Length: 288
Image (cartoon, rainbow, N blue to C red; front, side, top):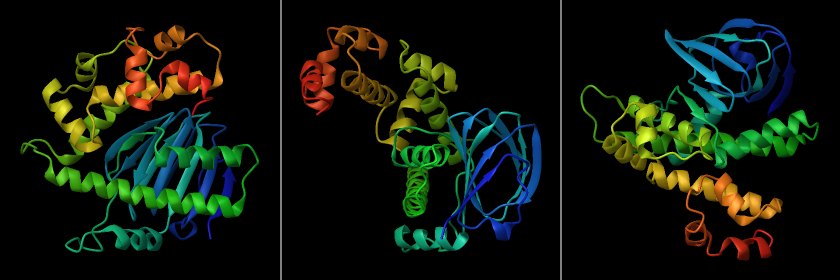
């Protein structure tokens, strides 16, 4: 059973109260709180919050989610206007899912989240977060549907973290660079890409913003995501273009330009390569 709760005050709870619960929070003033965690996901829709986890400082801003491991001492500071949801996952649920996906050589007690701020994108996790938030804020929360979404999201989180763990173990890293640091670079690159989907950006721009050479950025980004930074950029530009073709009457050349495609004559070629349709065909078929 998943509990649903709202809060406009300081988060005050014990570890026993946090198992399998969704807390929708809107801070009407600056708040700070200290507590011992269960497995937790913090998704911020507005504003920003700061966390200290075992002396590690983490800042989460709008559109990001933070993962926290079980049995950690957490200090958090929320600024007035911050709004989002917290998903508290019982250790029993997480370990049960982990048992279904772990390799035989992996210890059942070794599962841990990467405690980093992840950008929410339109993947299985991002879509579930958006659905959980909007169902509650729009007053359309169906308890059975929310519980199913909660379980699906928890499963996707465990799968995501295991994939990162396995890819991290096989990544070529120097003694000075940890897998967590490599993942930070990849997440920074993803965030920069999503913040600049409509801008004219190139690998040089992403590399400069992240602080990693083009070679290492390309290699590690592809290692963790399965595609290069520019392939990732193109995919989400195409997704934006598909939405505009389906839901707007904008001329195709304007859509191409507004989605970051500098060469509007090349846009139909790359669009067809990704979708199997030209932009005109896609619009005519009402989004296929």
